[in-house]
Length: 343
Image (cartoon, rainbow, N blue to C red; front, top):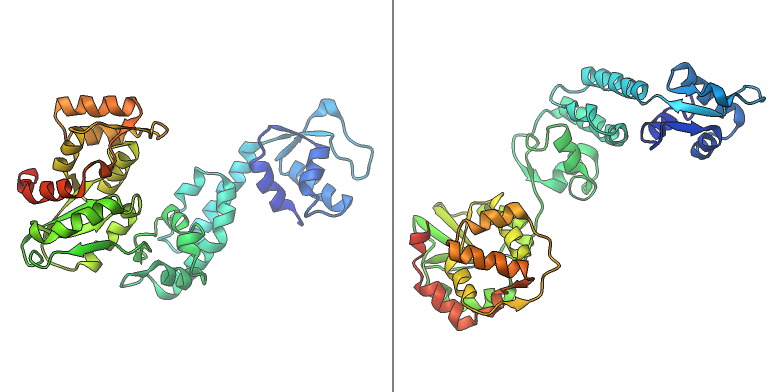
C-alpha cells in the first residue's frame, strides 16, 4: 500500500504518544497525494492496531471516516519490526548478525537494509576474502561505491552486522611521517619517539643519528591515532619495537596519548615531560575538556609530587606546550636520558 511503510517508519520515531489527524496529514503529504490514499493508509494502521482511535475526540464526517486523534501503539510497531528482522535473519547469509537492530531505532535498520542486501549477495557469491585490501577497494566490491566504508557510514554498518574484521579491510589513514636513523635499524630492540608538534620534530631531528632511537615520528596532533596503523607497512623491520610519546602537557595532549595507547602500546617520554615541569607553565587551554580516564592513566607514570603539580596546573587552566623546551635542550635530553630504564 502506497505510503504505509513510510508512515510506519515516521511513527516509530515520533516523539509523542498521541497524534491528531491534521499532523498525520502533514507527515504524509510528500508521499500520499489524495484523501482516499491517505484514508486507506490510516485505516490499515487502525486495523493493524498501530493507531488506536481516541474515542473522546470522535471521527470525521468524511467518507471514509477517520478519527480526529490517535494513540500510537509503539509496542505494536516494535513487534512488527522484530518480525521483519526474524524474516531477514532466515534469509540473509548466516554470518550477517542482526542482533544490534533489535535494540536500536528501526529507522537505522531501514537505512542499512539496502547495503546489507548487497553484502549478502556478495557473501553468497564470493564468500569471505582471503587477503586484506584497502577500504575503497573492498567498499566498491561490496556496494559498488568506493567511498561507502570510509565516508558514508559503511564502517559502522559492517560493525553493526559483525563483519568489519572478517572482511579484511585495510583502513585508509594519513601516511605516517617519520625520519629514520640508519645506524639503529638492524637492532633486535628498537626505540621510536613520537612527538605531537612539528616544531619539536624539527628541533629533535638533527640529534636523531646520535641517539639509540630508530625513528623520530611526527604525530601531527590527533592524526597519529589513526596513522600509527601504517607503521608495520611503512617500516617492515623485524624487531622488538618500543614506542615513546611526547606531546603538549595539556588536556588535549593527554587525551591524544591515551587514545593512541588504545591502538599501540606507547610509553610516555618522561624525561621531556619532567623537564617541562621544571619550567613556568603558560596560561591558556582552560577551555579544553578533561578526559578523566585519560588523565588518571597519564598521572600513574609520575611521582606523587609531579602528579599534584600536573593536576594543579590543569585545574588553573595553565599548560606546558612542547615548545617550552628549546631545540638544544630537547636534543640533550634525547641523547643523554636512560631510555632503557623506562622499558
